[in-house]
Length: 173
Image (cartoon, rainbow, N blue to C red):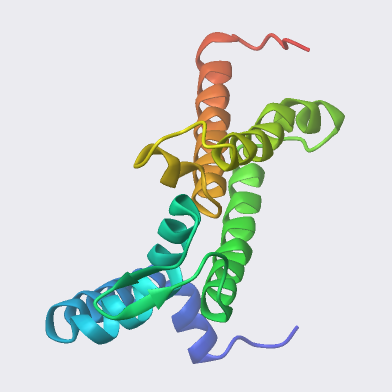
Protein backbone atom coordinates (compact mmCIF):
# COMPACT_ATOMS: atom_id res chain seq x y z
CA UNK A 1 0.00 0.00 0.00
CA UNK A 2 1.29 3.41 -0.93
CA UNK A 3 2.39 5.67 1.92
CA UNK A 4 0.45 8.80 2.67
CA UNK A 5 2.20 12.09 1.94
CA UNK A 6 2.46 14.97 4.39
CA UNK A 7 0.15 17.04 2.20
CA UNK A 8 -2.51 14.31 2.16
CA UNK A 9 -2.16 13.83 5.92
CA UNK A 10 -2.50 17.58 6.53
CA UNK A 11 -5.61 17.78 4.34
CA UNK A 12 -7.19 14.73 6.00
CA UNK A 13 -6.53 16.04 9.51
CA UNK A 14 -7.75 19.56 8.72
CA UNK A 15 -10.44 19.05 6.06
CA UNK A 16 -13.22 20.64 8.11
CA UNK A 17 -11.01 23.59 9.02
CA UNK A 18 -10.09 24.02 5.35
CA UNK A 19 -13.74 23.93 4.27
CA UNK A 20 -14.67 26.42 7.00
CA UNK A 21 -11.76 28.69 6.00
CA UNK A 22 -12.82 28.64 2.33
CA UNK A 23 -16.46 29.40 3.21
CA UNK A 24 -15.51 32.22 5.58
CA UNK A 25 -13.12 33.64 2.96
CA UNK A 26 -15.85 33.65 0.30
CA UNK A 27 -18.33 35.34 2.63
CA UNK A 28 -15.70 37.87 3.71
CA UNK A 29 -14.72 38.72 0.12
CA UNK A 30 -18.37 39.21 -0.84
CA UNK A 31 -19.08 41.29 2.29
CA UNK A 32 -16.06 43.52 1.67
CA UNK A 33 -17.01 43.83 -1.98
CA UNK A 34 -20.54 44.86 -1.04
CA UNK A 35 -19.14 47.49 1.33
CA UNK A 36 -16.33 48.91 -0.82
CA UNK A 37 -17.55 48.24 -4.37
CA UNK A 38 -21.35 47.88 -4.20
CA UNK A 39 -21.92 48.74 -7.86
CA UNK A 40 -19.58 45.96 -8.95
CA UNK A 41 -20.54 43.31 -6.38
CA UNK A 42 -24.24 43.98 -5.90
CA UNK A 43 -25.47 45.72 -9.03
CA UNK A 44 -23.30 44.02 -11.66
CA UNK A 45 -23.12 40.58 -10.05
CA UNK A 46 -25.75 39.72 -7.43
CA UNK A 47 -28.59 41.85 -8.86
CA UNK A 48 -27.88 41.13 -12.51
CA UNK A 49 -27.48 37.37 -12.19
CA UNK A 50 -29.47 36.27 -9.12
CA UNK A 51 -31.98 38.75 -7.69
CA UNK A 52 -32.93 40.68 -10.82
CA UNK A 53 -34.05 37.65 -12.85
CA UNK A 54 -36.31 36.51 -9.99
CA UNK A 55 -37.87 39.98 -9.72
CA UNK A 56 -38.24 40.17 -13.52
CA UNK A 57 -39.99 36.79 -13.51
CA UNK A 58 -42.35 37.94 -10.75
CA UNK A 59 -43.37 41.16 -12.52
CA UNK A 60 -43.31 39.69 -16.02
CA UNK A 61 -40.88 42.11 -17.68
CA UNK A 62 -37.27 43.33 -17.53
CA UNK A 63 -36.35 45.26 -14.40
CA UNK A 64 -33.66 47.84 -13.72
CA UNK A 65 -31.65 48.66 -10.61
CA UNK A 66 -29.04 51.46 -10.63
CA UNK A 67 -28.87 51.30 -14.42
CA UNK A 68 -28.36 47.52 -14.54
CA UNK A 69 -31.10 45.70 -16.45
CA UNK A 70 -32.06 42.16 -15.46
CA UNK A 71 -34.06 39.82 -17.68
CA UNK A 72 -36.27 36.88 -16.80
CA UNK A 73 -34.51 33.54 -16.82
CA UNK A 74 -31.07 32.26 -16.05
CA UNK A 75 -27.76 33.78 -17.07
CA UNK A 76 -24.59 31.82 -17.77
CA UNK A 77 -23.19 32.97 -14.42
CA UNK A 78 -26.30 31.91 -12.52
CA UNK A 79 -26.44 28.54 -14.31
CA UNK A 80 -22.83 27.80 -13.39
CA UNK A 81 -23.43 28.91 -9.80
CA UNK A 82 -26.59 26.83 -9.42
CA UNK A 83 -24.83 23.87 -11.04
CA UNK A 84 -22.04 24.07 -8.48
CA UNK A 85 -24.60 24.39 -5.67
CA UNK A 86 -26.46 21.35 -7.04
CA UNK A 87 -23.33 19.19 -7.19
CA UNK A 88 -22.31 20.21 -3.65
CA UNK A 89 -25.86 19.69 -2.35
CA UNK A 90 -26.07 16.22 -3.89
CA UNK A 91 -22.73 15.30 -2.35
CA UNK A 92 -23.69 16.49 1.13
CA UNK A 93 -27.19 14.97 0.90
CA UNK A 94 -25.58 11.67 -0.08
CA UNK A 95 -23.26 11.90 2.94
CA UNK A 96 -26.25 12.75 5.18
CA UNK A 97 -28.28 9.81 3.88
CA UNK A 98 -25.34 7.47 4.52
CA UNK A 99 -24.88 8.87 8.04
CA UNK A 100 -28.59 8.48 8.83
CA UNK A 101 -28.58 4.95 7.35
CA UNK A 102 -31.39 5.81 4.96
CA UNK A 103 -32.09 2.98 2.57
CA UNK A 104 -32.80 4.31 -0.91
CA UNK A 105 -35.48 2.01 -2.27
CA UNK A 106 -39.02 2.14 -3.62
CA UNK A 107 -40.45 3.21 -0.28
CA UNK A 108 -38.00 6.10 -0.06
CA UNK A 109 -38.86 7.22 -3.59
CA UNK A 110 -42.60 7.06 -2.85
CA UNK A 111 -42.01 9.09 0.33
CA UNK A 112 -40.32 11.78 -1.80
CA UNK A 113 -43.23 12.08 -4.26
CA UNK A 114 -45.06 14.88 -2.37
CA UNK A 115 -41.88 16.98 -2.38
CA UNK A 116 -41.20 16.19 -6.03
CA UNK A 117 -44.75 17.23 -6.99
CA UNK A 118 -44.74 20.31 -4.75
CA UNK A 119 -42.12 22.07 -6.94
CA UNK A 120 -43.88 22.02 -10.29
CA UNK A 121 -47.34 22.56 -8.78
CA UNK A 122 -46.08 25.60 -6.84
CA UNK A 123 -44.35 26.92 -9.93
CA UNK A 124 -47.56 26.62 -11.96
CA UNK A 125 -49.49 28.43 -9.22
CA UNK A 126 -46.89 31.21 -9.30
CA UNK A 127 -47.09 31.45 -13.10
CA UNK A 128 -50.88 31.79 -12.86
CA UNK A 129 -50.43 34.74 -10.45
CA UNK A 130 -51.94 32.84 -7.53
CA UNK A 131 -49.37 34.38 -5.18
CA UNK A 132 -48.79 38.10 -4.72
CA UNK A 133 -45.49 39.97 -4.32
CA UNK A 134 -43.41 39.46 -2.14
CA UNK A 135 -44.58 35.87 -1.47
CA UNK A 136 -44.36 35.07 -5.18
CA UNK A 137 -40.55 35.39 -5.05
CA UNK A 138 -40.37 32.22 -2.95
CA UNK A 139 -42.17 30.26 -5.67
CA UNK A 140 -39.86 31.20 -8.54
CA UNK A 141 -37.07 28.84 -9.47
CA UNK A 142 -34.46 28.34 -8.19
CA UNK A 143 -35.73 29.63 -4.82
CA UNK A 144 -38.64 27.16 -4.76
CA UNK A 145 -36.21 24.27 -5.24
CA UNK A 146 -33.94 25.50 -2.44
CA UNK A 147 -36.98 25.66 -0.17
CA UNK A 148 -38.20 22.20 -1.19
CA UNK A 149 -34.72 20.80 -0.60
CA UNK A 150 -34.62 22.40 2.84
CA UNK A 151 -38.11 21.11 3.73
CA UNK A 152 -37.28 17.61 2.54
CA UNK A 153 -34.02 17.41 4.47
CA UNK A 154 -35.65 18.90 7.58
CA UNK A 155 -38.52 16.38 7.50
CA UNK A 156 -36.10 13.52 6.82
CA UNK A 157 -33.87 14.43 9.77
CA UNK A 158 -36.92 15.00 11.99
CA UNK A 159 -38.37 11.64 10.93
CA UNK A 160 -35.12 9.80 11.65
CA UNK A 161 -34.92 11.52 15.05
CA UNK A 162 -38.49 10.55 15.89
CA UNK A 163 -37.91 6.99 14.68
CA UNK A 164 -34.87 6.70 16.92
CA UNK A 165 -36.58 8.39 19.87
CA UNK A 166 -39.97 6.69 19.80
CA UNK A 167 -39.78 3.42 17.85
CA UNK A 168 -38.01 1.37 20.56
CA UNK A 169 -36.65 -0.93 17.90
CA UNK A 170 -39.98 -1.51 16.17
CA UNK A 171 -40.21 -1.12 12.44
CA UNK A 172 -43.20 0.74 11.04
CA UNK A 173 -42.98 -0.88 7.61
